[in-house]
Image 1 (cartoon, one colour):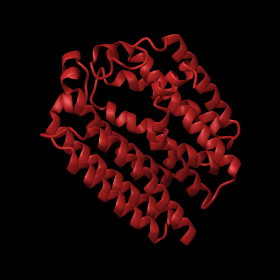
Image 2 (cartoon, rainbow, N blue to C red):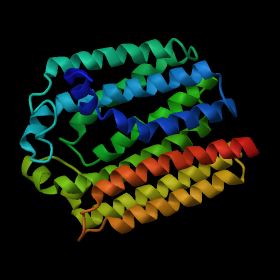
Image 3 (tube, rainbow, N blue to C red):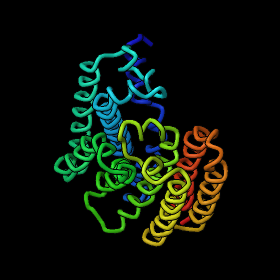
Image 4 (cartoon, rainbow, N blue to C red):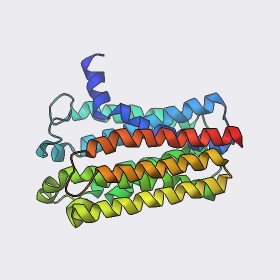
Length: 284
């Protein structure tokens, strides 16, 4: 791959779309009570990747100076001079255009609702400058993916779909707190707010556990609302076990396996949850 596209793909961590894409597919599947039209499924995936690319691009360009002063992030593409801010702004513009185009290929209601997805993306990078609630705001940003996918296929916004927001939102917020434990010293020095920086690592990890418990409760809510069959409940139990494992390997006195918890466990959990929904719809 030529260097600029490669650097931009690395900047937005394109492969991390694997965290959110399964949940967007879950939203589409539940909206159709089975397999939606393949065209809809394709445009949902395109919209999700475009939205995530936009969100990551905005975060990187707005936080460029902060990243440059953090030893852990100083090697990122903008601080390292591998890409310019102008190039990232251009990527954001293209991503926004693709996202808006996608909404015109889906249920008509989506073409009016897309600003409700984009505005939280713009707000998020500034949240950490004021409050530790930035973790929950990030959860909101990513948690809108399955709700948006549901609306894009069904054309309506049912109350129960917001259980999906809870599944993803609490899950993301919980592991974002775990991830923030790597930057406690820097965040305190810079006046950046996070749960670990504001409350200490031990208390922050307990908050992460509570949020992950809320994610499992939301999974139960989804199952009851959608009337999903027994394979779904097996998947929920396995997801709960994975989250217990995640917290077992990340402790206040041992943060050496944060990356293992962040990447490996969470990708497995996302696809496991999708598999549970698919199996439940087939059986049910």
